[in-house]
Amino acid sequence: MRAVDLIHKKRDGEQLTFAEIDYLIKGYCQGEIPDYQMSAWSMAVFFRGMTKKETADLTMAMAHSGDTVDLGAIHGLTADKHSTGGVGDKTTLVVAPLVAAIGVPVAKMSGRGLGHTGGTIDKLEAIEGFRTELQRDDFFAQVNDIGLAVIGQSGNLTPADKKLYALRDVTATVESIPLIASSVMSKKIAAGADVIVLDVKAGSGAFMKSLEDAEHLARAMVDIGTEVGRRTAAVISDMDQPLGAAIGNALEVAEAIATLKGQGPKDLERLCLTLAAHMAVLAGKAGSIEEAELILREALRSGAALDKFRALVVAQGGDPSMVDQPDRLPAATAFVEVKAESSGWVTGIQAEQLGLAAMKLGAGRATKEAAIDYAVGMLLKKKVGDAVSLGETLAVLHTHEGYVGLDAIMSETAAAFTIDSAQPEAKPLLLSIVTADETRRL
Image (cartoon, rainbow, N blue to C red; front, side):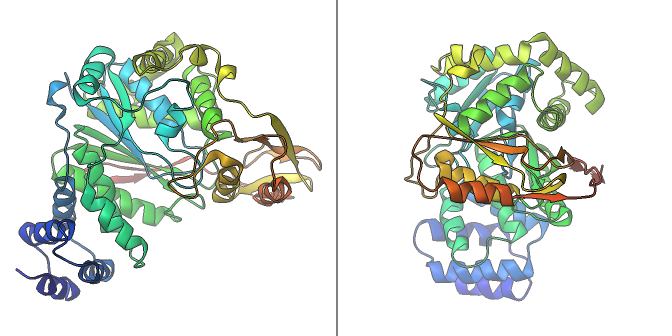
């Protein structure tokens, strides 16, 4: 078998076998296939695509390129969720304890952020003392004890994906749906969960700008999960504006805690309930989405979900008083209001622009080595559809005294809001549901 023959085969639109795909992935990981040949193969995939079988085979080859996690030591079907990213996306902080509170074990490996704000692990580390690294046996024992653990990803989980993604990033092949889908799903499958629910974002603040592209990606990922025996579904949600009101690590933790108390933003609560309901149904805890939502709402009302989050914090060494008193989380020392420059209605918010502004304040990383300031970020005071008067506050920047460059960030934040004279039509948060059997627009 030679790499050049497989490049030729894919270039001509033919289907590769598992053995051929596995040969490419293993050879690339071991340094036997050079970057230039893998680049050529990636570009052939970009233009020719892959079949469902090829995409599933690529996913499994990457999933088994390094460590895999066998969750067999955990009692019951384990569940995991993945978001394709977005501004203000703190859903894991709500969904994981909510699902665990109704008896579905959640054994989650999450990543750090690179870009807008921190990832789930960074947000949890805003809680003083919270440990995001556990030995494997301790990880399993904690899930069996309290039904929930959230840790950082293993250093050797899917090394093929890390290497291939870095190559795609510099060869203009990132946007290939089979390659994106296999990248995401290889990590989920290597992490071992039986149930996988995907939160796929669509809109200006998402990687997939159109609903159609988001549906294609969701379908590819659900098909992969189904093909390899995982119970998989996807919820496509709008990211034409940030989720909730908080952008920034400690601010998002506080908003997640408020949501677990039933006092959070309605869009965040709605999305979290939907994701959790699909996890509950796939795990066999409810017979329908409607039944699951009733059970989950009771877990919010009774305080069971908040108790589960507190138990997670205690189990992983964090300070539980920060759950009971979120004002003890890291806090900014300066608060700057960004004012509306006209009156009317908010008709659009450029989520990505706000995310980048938060990153410049220190809430995210421009490079892997950069440090995060857990305290900084912004709170939105207006969302799409809200009326606004000249001089009214659109957002409050959380920063520190003496921050250099604040005027530019204030201008960028103000420019992210579109204010028009006519009230916009309401746009739904939830756009589509993709299951093994159907794609259904809402």
